[in-house]
Length: 162
Ligand code: FES
Ligand code: FES
Image (cartoon, rainbow, N blue to C red; front, side):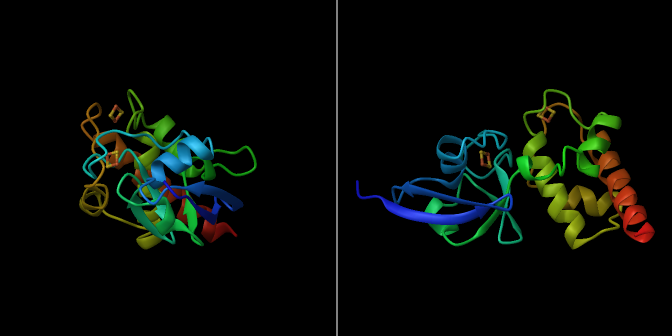
């Protein structure tokens, strides 16, 4: 099948590849760019394990074609830590036991990151609605919600101190 060249920015770095029209963004990220942090669960847009940011919005990368990301900006879980330091969300998930098997975690973190961009001080209920597209089979969500709210507080305090 004929391939199309695409160029995009992934985690702040320029990236390029050659994809078939049917190539999914998750496959491009994992197989061509080697960014295997985003997981593949259902491939039917239900589980959220493949969640990434595309142009400032959360998307399920199993239901986006790679060509749709041409010229765009993508953030994956690999882009959260900066300068060797965990993102406050990653630190809070570790501290508050916001994960067990970890399969949902990359998608959950990237979704939570976008949620906190949209609402820096969400209530428990708002966090639960915000992550409702991301399924976790292990935790019962309680510690995920706690971790996201604690990260939100840490981020607000950091910003206020700057
Ligand atoms: S793998 Fe994309 S939503 Fe489940
Ligand atoms: S930690 Fe196992 S699916 Fe969420």
